[in-house]
Image 1 (spheres, rainbow, N blue to C red):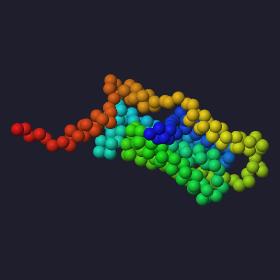
Image 2 (cartoon, rainbow, N blue to C red):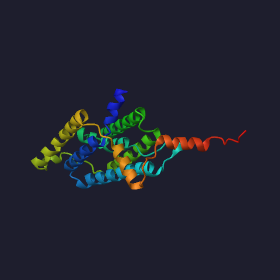
Image 3 (tube, rainbow, N blue to C red):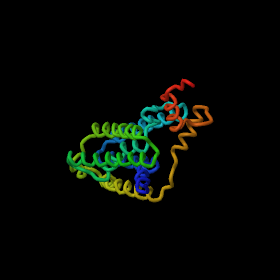
Image 4 (tube, helix red, strand yellow):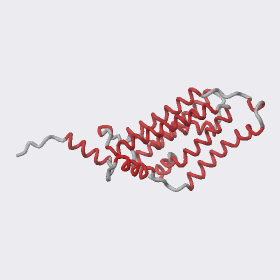
Length: 227
């Protein structure tokens, strides 16, 4: 179980979001396309808001899907699927299409592993993990499809400062991921989302998975005809 708690930590927003900013800068410097970097961040923000909305809807108003055990998109899985393929692309630059596909596949595989960890530690259901994986993968796919091909040998025409920055960014990303994974304090995003949900809904108590499943059991139980 300790292993899965370590794996699930790889999907924490406090670790991934700053790394995403560094990766966006690295992508822009390496491919000379701030438009692609900004597009990635816009898509990431949109996916994050959609994930947050799904959680607010359930916790505040009870809008879930009991039959699928769905109470909201898994944020850890979504962030992992949206970020790790491009984070790894920044750390492991590949010049061939096959190499790029391998890097992206490795990132999606890591996201899937993080999703499995969310189920194992009892935080999410499979439907929530799959929703997060699909949403994050759509962000990655949209960026990769619109991403311009890297200019081979472009360093000959780039400035020394730009070349140095493109080399430094992957080192910064690797250092950030290593240091924060080892030393960053645990952060309960669920508690923050719960407080926000109750404030918006004007309720004193939150809707819970257990309550949703109990309600489904009552609806599905045979009616007692009495003696």
